[in-house]
Length: 131
Image (cartoon, rainbow, N blue to C red):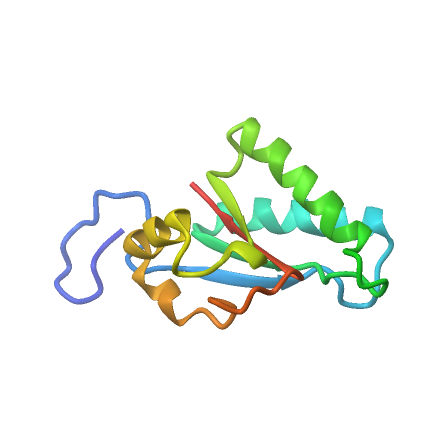
């Protein structure tokens, strides 16, 4: 690709700039299978489009004990991480500046300092770090 400012060729495969996306997996109150399918397609789409951070909104569950979509999404992310399909993921409850993993991520992507869920302890979201 060419730099839009100076015309120089960009030798990297990544576009300039940081890209993040948010996907609401619980929109429309889907069944578990639909939500998991939506999550997997969202991760694939994000990879194709060079998104670096994907925020998944899966909710915490109406029971107040943690919903099945949340639990199963995180199990799927564990599997995707073990297969090298994603770099990492950070649960919403662990997404705060005091966490070592988050500090490292903030150094890598300073734009995340403005993320709406940072330091909120939100159990209804998970951030996916893509390669």
